[in-house]
Image (cartoon, rainbow, N blue to C red; front, top):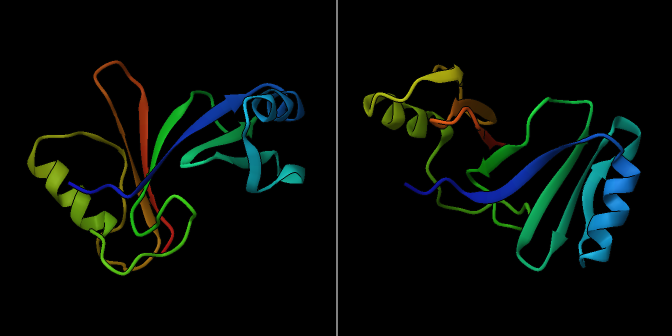
Length: 123
């Protein structure tokens, strides 16, 4: 099952302090909007998102249809198909994609320890 590009979305207390810390580790701002309390940083193929006040827990994030540079790819498995496959495997959803739509959509599942996993398709 190809889930697309991977990143870790971190719930941070202080966006600027977190940005400064991760820049010391070699990350650079790639995208985002600091005025809206979120930034995406990259170090090579590694991607992290910093989100202040937007959610409570860190989230594992997958983006079907994107590569690690947030560029659309031609062939990928649509988020609704991934959702159908997971439902068939008995996975419980915290939030579901509307399967009657096309294009951007997302769903959230929790792993056995309660860690949120966001599958967020932007294309």
